[in-house]
Length: 310
Length: 330
Figure 1 (cartoon, each protein chain N blue to C red):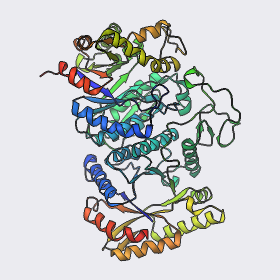
Figure 2: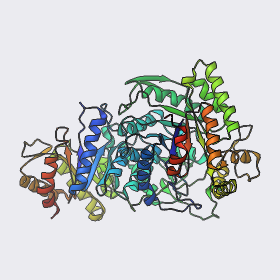
Figure 3: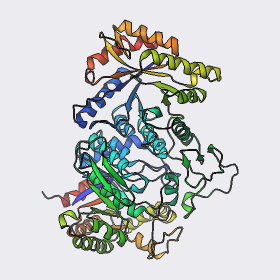
């Protein structure tokens, strides 16, 4: 199982200090064998990170191994073209370590279908050459006719190749998003708070993500339901990366959404959840108070992480 | 006079083939070098859906450079503002500003390639007016915790951006190509004005237009700052400098002639013209060729004109050792 870190930001600090604390922890995690860092899109305080991919590009310049996931991404605050492009830039700076996780639409009033179309668009943008997209929320390019097939479509006939610099004022019907990522398919996940998204993700091999605020019993139920739907639909388990995010109190007290106990207790709790749900990625959400506690990072890296891997 | 330098080469063009995954991380090393050499800022351009993988999100690229440098500033140029909501653009800039601890600037252009507007779903014909409003909105967004703005194209009421930037506001430059309309628009609004590549004579005309419009609108010289992009080819002899220019023309031909960058006297975009087109020839004359002494002499003319910064392309070490010291006060 892979292990990663995510963060509650210290709202009492100024953004420079709060962000540097996270960047420093990503650097430590990079050296201690953590597999991933996840930074959420938020807009609720002066320290909020509205552009995780810009933040992760900075992290890419300081790290060599850790995966850099832009998480809790909202489809209403980022243009779908730019979302696809931004992850590629993180990917290129990190040589294939970028990924993206989308927030559940219900958390910010977005139609789940808007989320699904955006994910479909982004994955197509990374893999296809010239294409167009016709959806309820995503139309690319703008002049794509109503008669175009729903979702992505590619040219069905090959006309003589015309280089871009000879297009003149014409606006082609099909366009390629460039540059392409270094990784063949950067990891994509989505929060499965919404039933519609849970089912869509399970049927379409999009990895599920359960965030730290969901009580553990509900998290287990939702991840198990995802797995059952995916299995029934004949999806290969190896195609996805079910991910559970939890706050963790090493030697501390548990809550309905916080795992707590000794290192050995934590290993057994996570492994139990794994057998119930098939999670393959566990993300420790660092509280603001824990951020900067390198001793806790090292303890988890030494005593918990290896026992989750084998 | 300050010197800005480019985070160039982030594409794999047919003229200069390269590996993007290898090239991107090297920008970080180039930024460190530029910081050590004493350049004042790094620039980065923006285009989309280019066959050569041209860089798409300049503020992100500059964030990588910001993470490993301490003094140098960062300015996307040109960031294609009409393809962004102003609040979205302000948030990207604020993000870079926090990562760099107050070293972000914005360089906003209007764009010109039709397919980019079609891909993002924005109207091309309103790009000038929208960019003007966007700069006004961005100035408010990066200087007040809550702001309202009522324009023809953009409306915000009690809006905020996240995070709050370090600078208040983030300096924002208007890139208006080389059209006099743009120079007057920048002056009228008191925007710092960043000219595209032009001959000195053309630059002088544009700067005068800009300042005249600015003064008429009540702005002072301190508020009316000018930066110039200046392509130069430096050789041991004039012949060598001219040969260097020839080597660069294939790349220029594609970018300058192919996508409608040049505009004729009626404001119409020029596509696919030949090298003998008078406007292309005028553009080509903007590339200054000379020996080191002549280049310094030419740049001194820009300094005397009151230009705040020049964007330098080429070998950073050569510029730092041979040209920058000529413009330092001590």
